[in-house]
Image (cartoon, rainbow, N blue to C red; front, top):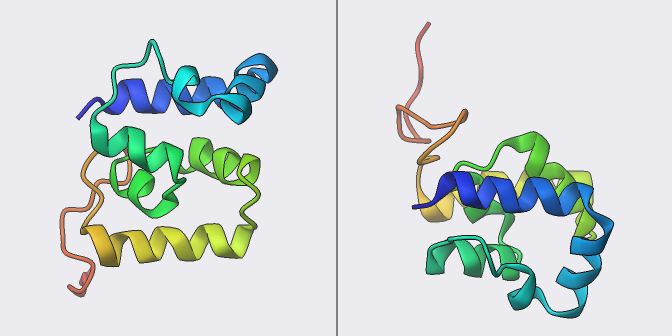
Length: 107
């Protein structure tokens, strides 16, 4: 998994008007130059917010990408929850889960 490259692409997409225009016109071409796995590439192109979350994309980066894709706040939050249910615990990054989503954390 190329977590850094995935996050870097989304970070740049969130801030670069030219990259946004390119992504709207030719999304595959916009991804050139970023070393992404097939799973990561597919998640960006769908967009699969839940899978991107599980892959470890930071929520601050991901929420801007979701807004760029026309996904409203409540739907964004639900897609993250659904992503954990469908794809399993967050695999990398700040939100990596050390317990399964069904376990109760006592603390």
